[in-house]
Each structure stands twice: as C-alpha cells, then as structure tokens.
Length: 115
Image (cartoon, rainbow, N blue to C red; front, side):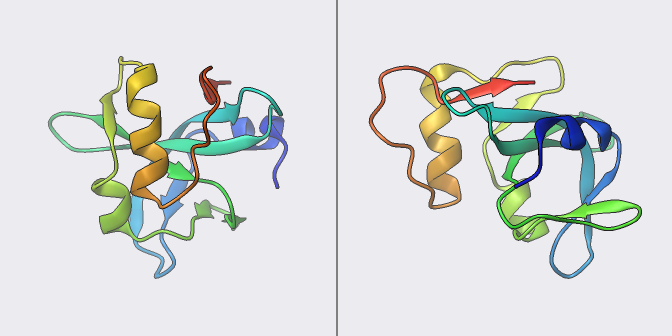
C-alpha cells in the first residue's frame, strides 16, 4: 500500500486503466478513518462539466507519468460521482464500496476522509 503522502505527491498525474486508457487526473486521496490507510482516490474527468469519480487504490501501480489502477475506464466512469467542488455524503459512502464489490462493513461512523 502507498503512504498517503506519496499519493498526494501524485496529484495531477493521469490515472490510467489496465489497458493504459486515460481515465482522468488524480485529484484527491481518501483514507480509511480508522487506519489512515489510503482506500480511494478521486479522478477528475469531463470536458464541459467536470466531475470526480472514486476509484480504489488497492493494486494500483505507479509509472513515470501515471498511476495505473485495476479498474477499467468504464467501471470508474460508472462509479458514484461528486462535483469538483462537492463532498461525498455519508449516505453515499456504501454506494462507492458496493460499486467496486468491496465490503463497507457495519461501523456506524464514516469510513472515508479526504487527505
């Protein structure tokens, strides 16, 4: 797993899928609220209306000019999104995990925090 500080250093890098298709640009890192380990990054995309989609960082690799994630461009673009100036609502967190078939758990508090 990548330290949060390293992921933040990559803000602005391209996010690419397993087939090297550009998905968008790394915008922010979201960590687990208990462990402070990175769980997701947001990817900025769109020409006219910019949005942010969430993509897990598990299994991600770094290339000289991009961060390669394990999910396809279509999977990421179909993920729950927020506006670039928006915030992920607590009620929407489980939807982000479910989209990628990840276990959200049963904790009553929020799982994700932006770093």
